[in-house]
Amino acid sequence: MLFNSLDYLIFLVLALAGFWALRHFGIERDVYEGADANAGRPARRLVVRRSWLRLFFLSYASFVFYMGWNPYYIGLMLFSTILDFFTGSRIGASEDPGVRKFWLIVSIVGNLGLLCTFKYFNFFSDTTEQALALAGVHADIPVLRLALPVGISFYTFETLSYAIDVYYRRLEPERDFLRFAYFVAFFPHLVAGPIIRAAEFLPQVHRPPWLTRERVSGALFLIGLGLAKKIIFADYIAVNLVDRVFANPTLYSSVEVVLGLYGFTLLIYADFSGYTDVARGSARLFGIELPENFDRPYQATSVAEFWRRWHMTLSTWLRDYVYFPLGGSKKGEARTYLNLWITIFLIGLWHGGGTGESSGLWNFVIYGNLQAFAVMGNRVFDRLRKRWGWTAPDPIWLVVIQIVVTLQFVVFSRILFRASSPSNAWAVFDQLFDGTSSVAQIDADVWRILVLGFYLHYVPRSQLEWLRARFVSLPAFAQGLALALIGAILVLFVTSEVVPFIYFQF
Image: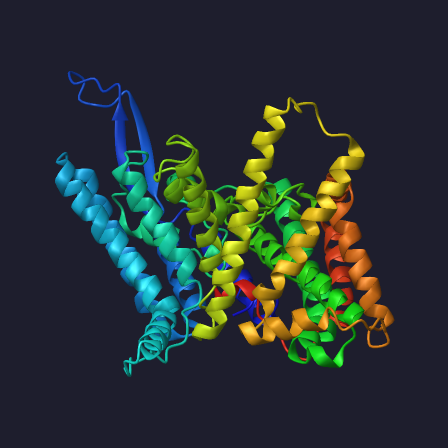
C-alpha cells in the first residue's frame, strides 16, 4: 500500500476514524488521594483511563498495512518486536554486567543476523565463491531466492537501538508489550522511516493523544507537500528522463547523461523527503511527532555536512551507535579516521542489497568508500584551516563555490547509487566523455521540472514557512479547496502506474 495511492487515502481515513473513536475506550481504575481513613471515604477521587483498545486497533491496522506487500514477512517484524521487548526487559531487570551484556549480544546477533541474511547473504555467498575460484577451488555455495522484506532495515535498527539504550541506562525498559509493538509497527514510519528511537516515541504513547486545528492543518500541509514532491518531481523525472538514461546510456549524448544525473539527484531527494513529509503528516494526525529527516542537503558546503543533512535519522543513528562506541574522536587521529571510515562506509553499505543481487551491492561498496574518503578529506582540510589560522567565516562567494563543488560530488558519485550493476555504472560514466552535446531528447516539460525543482530547494526557508503559515491560517473550507486544487494538479502528472518509493528497497 503506497502513500501515493487511493488505497492509502482510504486506509488512512479509516484508521483515523477508528483510532479517535476509541480514544476514551479502555480500562478505568480509581485512584484516591488525600483519603481520610477515619471517615472511610476519599477526600479526592481520580479516574485513570488506559485506552488500550486504540493502541491494539492501530497496531493491528499497521500489521494489515505491512502485510499488503507480503503477509508472510509479518513474522520477521514480530520476531524483532518480541526479541527486543524480551531482551530489553532482561537487561533492565538485571544488575549483573555479564548478564546484561549477554542479552545485549542476543539482541545484536538476532537483529543484525536477520538483516544480513536477507540483504547481504547472496553478496557474501557469490563473493566467496568467486574468491575460491580465483584460488583454483570450485565451490557451489547456495544463494537465497528471497525478496527483501519491505522496511527491514528500518525496524531492525529501531528495535536494536531500544535494547542498546536500555543497556546503557538511557531508557527504562517498556513494561507494556502492546505499547512496544505499537512503537515498532506504527505504519507511517514502518517501511521507510524516518528511523525513530524508542526514547522519542514511547513517551508520546504514554500521554493521551491530542490534536488542535493548527496541528491538523500542519499535518495536511505536510501530506500535500510530500505528494507534490513525489508525483510532480520524483515520478515525472524518473519516467521521462532518469530511467531511460540508465537503461540505455549509449543512446544519449554526454550532456543528456549529465542532465539525467542531475535529474536523479532531484528525483531521489523529492522521492525520499516526499515520503518523509507524508509519514510525518500522517503520524501527526494520530498525535505523534516524527523527527525531521532532511535539512536542505544540497545546500551543504562539504560532504560531511551533506551527510548531516541527508537521511539525518540514519546518520545520527550510526553516529550514536557505531561512531561514538568505537571511540569517536577521543582515541587519537588515526583511530578517528578509522572510525569515520567505518561509519560512513556503513551508511553506503546500508543502502545496498535491495535487489538481492551481489553485483548491485558492489556499487554501494564503492559508493560507501567514496563517501568515507570524502568525509575524511573534509576533516583533514578543516584541521589544516585551523592550523593556518583561517577561522573567520567564509565570504559568500566561497560558500557558493563550496556548495557547487559538494553538489557535483554528490551528483556524479550517485551514478553508483542508481546503476543496476558496476557494468551499468561504467557505461553511464563512459558516456559522459562521449563528447556529444545534443539535448534533442530532453523535452520542454523535463527542463521546467528540473529548473523548478532545484529552484525550490534553494529558495529561503522562510518562503516555505510563510506558505505553511498561510495555509494553516485559512478557514477549513478554504483548506479543502486548496487541497482539492493540489489533487487536480497532481492528477495531471500521475504516471500510468503508481511508482514505488525508492527507499522501500532498503
